[in-house]
Image 1 (cartoon, rainbow, N blue to C red):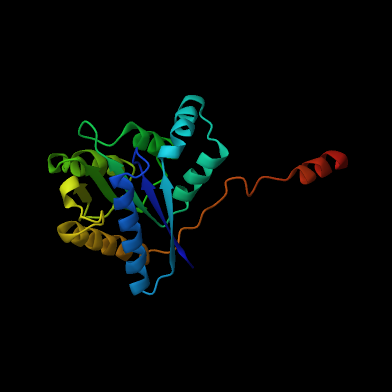
Image 2 (cartoon, helix red, strand yellow):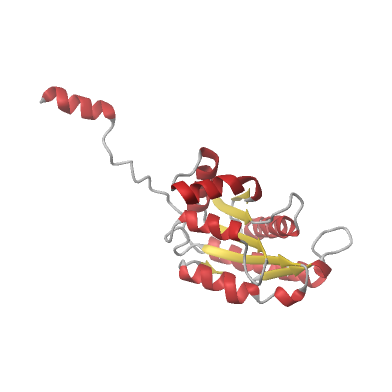
Length: 207
């Protein structure tokens, strides 16, 4: 059965470093799973286009169709790459809002690779003092290696290079090991056992 890897990118610009890092981690995880003989597919969720939908859902308690599709993709994922830019020493409000909409059981036992970006390396501890506690609280199975990328970590062509490329590959291997060791996630629809309208009408006619 094909494993589902969902990459969540909380970058706030259309061509963000967070999205580049998220893409690199998703591709490396896919390659690592293939090396282990595990079929997998990667779905990337860019939160920026969903910013208004996320805000509306937080205010009303109801997610629109597109946003609900993204939430369902995370709930069904066998592994997640969670990447956010760092502002004021922590993940962004957009990223946290999306995680809040998923509910407290969404990541229960799910392998999660943590990643963050910022302009300078002085924000690198945000992975350990902000993101890891958040996902530990949600009972996610966090990958030991978190990946932080500052502006100077990128190569001249905008691709992960040097030490950053090594961290990407190591974290991806760790995520692939956790995903490959677990059975594929089975998503149960809470309404599967509910009777259809046809059954309900039939019961009414029979009295």
